Length: 132
Image 1 (tube, rainbow, N blue to C red):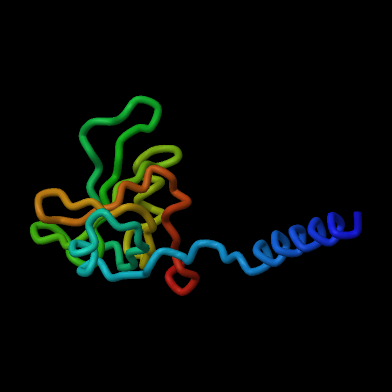
Image 2: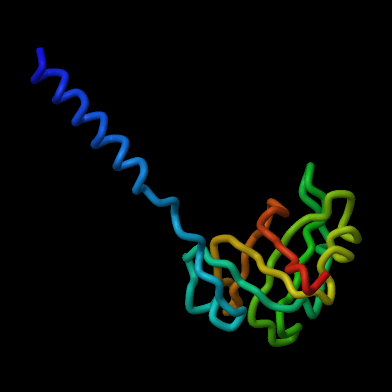
């Protein structure tokens, strides 16, 4: 009986110590808009200044019209953009981010040679305190 108790205690201690030393996943790497193109398919946080916005002509049912935000370099030669939706319309999203430095986290996709993140959840977009 003593051997069984000892084994049970040892197993419990092993599990507890494994949990104690377990680390949460590291945050995604922070990169510049220019670096994003070479990181296609990766999840990263891209930080830069919103320099231009565009509202789509067409909306999505239940979401409204998507807004595209160019970071660091506007059309006709953008290097990175993110797409999101306003909570009450596109004007709200534009007011929240236009002209500000932002950090957007998500999976990087490249389309027509330009990297972007689809930020359907506005929690993916952060405005650092110094930019507010």
